[in-house]
Length: 87
Image (tube, one colour):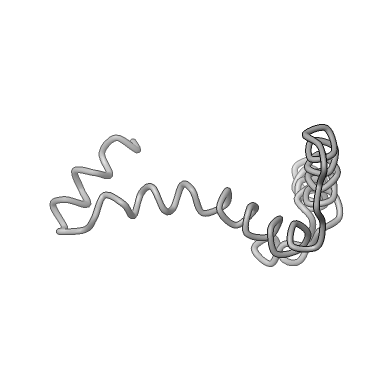
């Protein structure tokens, strides 16, 4: 289905970049949050320090950080809520 969108967009006179932007939005938002919330405050000295810091941030981002698009729930809380509703 996604393959049809560029054709539909071009038929409507829309840019093909719209598709790319929509698919990249969650990733871009993650990195924006990561940079603004943490990376401006720390200087990591080694690659290992950076890897550990990124893993810690990913755990926080998915388990504790509220997301406006998820009704101010973390992704894990949101997933648990859906699972409870479908159980």
